[in-house]
Image: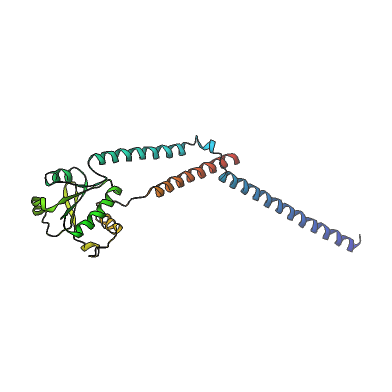
Length: 231
């Protein structure tokens, strides 16, 4: 056989093998991309009807409903005790008010003092937001017994009670920069640090957390279905 012919034949065979291998690799890539696209489609386009019977989503929804119901019941109980508003109390009512709730903030004030009016404004604003804490005010002039008992020397004086025991106090504006123009948020942060109120999440934040929990559950369900289909 002609050596040149043999060489040409071998070259053509080698070239054919390279083309065949390239074709196989290309086919594998196409299959891989198609599988990835199908997986992505499953994750993004989950049949919502199928999710209605998903036990994890049902539990998530039931837990949220139960939490709302429990919170509503607590709010009703607090409101019956005078929470959710900034109320005036008398010296005769004072003891029952501070021992009747776990957390109580009481402002001892003088009706003629400008700084007492500033404190009233901020406490009134916080009282509706922090319903788990009771907010009350007591005219110091009409409560000489408790003013002496609690050693109140300077007004405004905000005393913090936990389970009927005075645990801390704000005297004047010393902890608020000693200025009249402090913000309600500044007072709120101070009271949070003292542990008499808690940081509150707004409704939007709670909804975002719930939506994220649902999305995680949907992704988990879709992934499980995808694994089941591949089996």
